[in-house]
Length: 407
Image 1 (cartoon, helix red, strand yellow):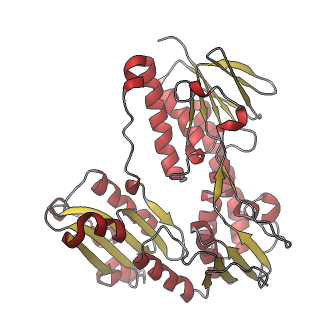
Image 2 (cartoon, rainbow, N blue to C red):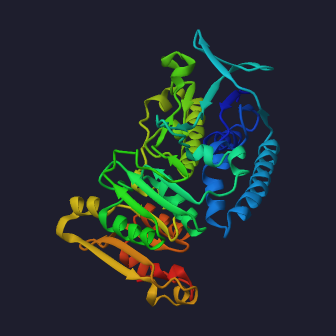
Image 3 (cartoon, rainbow, N blue to C red):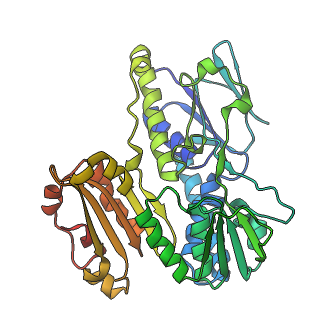
């Protein structure tokens, strides 16, 4: 196969994973990864990793010290992995131009004509206009912000998962925390049963949750953080020839807002590498094939509150609409699980949905310590459309939290 030239712009989970996947498919290709800020993108520096570091500590001082080390080690590991794959990392801002069915990527020291371009530009937080100083989660995890001591009180505007996670983490460290949401519910993507249970846990932490709030003049907390969702970066900023999209230019990751999650970005990276490989093998056949879209209910949702919430598959509303009276629900407290008793997590919650006639498993939900890890057990069960009978024939080790999935 003729030697190919690839460029990837953006080094977050979608970008660096795409570079590695393309190397697997094209061992002899030249692959360039452009990044204008820090290797690892928002996930490593202002999102997934810093927030989970905060989730794991017992003081804000411990958080700021441990986060610096964690980011350094992960960035170093990522750099080594990319270099081992002979991917050239270019820490420069890149521009793109298209002409005569060709794609060009340029930066301060590089001028490339590429066969394929992958855009993984990520997203940015939406801003809230206000007379007072209001920060975003990106600000909160910035290097400049982290040198400051923890505030005594916080107000989070917006009741999405970022606000709820940070509110729960900071409350566990002793801060006074409030969440304000203009809609009638926080965490609108959860069904009412899961939402009410999680709110109960939040309120036990002393977190004040107020909904249907439009007036922000009464906000008196020391630090105000607005999490109003994130805006996807667009390929439009490059003024590209649209006929080259999905032919020579591909966009992945948070640029697609259907599921702006790092683990979904990894999936997209694998898929784009497969598509490009198919185009090279048989262009005509690859272009006529329709892509099989993944069922987004099979993408796990994880919320790192204290306790954690994890869900995969249909929720109660979706399952009732699809299966009506044949829907069955199995609910468990973790009190009957020996490991949960040992680690004092016996008040946690487990739910499984299934269809009675065919015993098809429809969804799992967990609220408790380690829920975000446990949900991985459910991924192959749902992805392979296993039934209650299939799970009944599985053996789970004892005593473990994994036994929650045993029937």
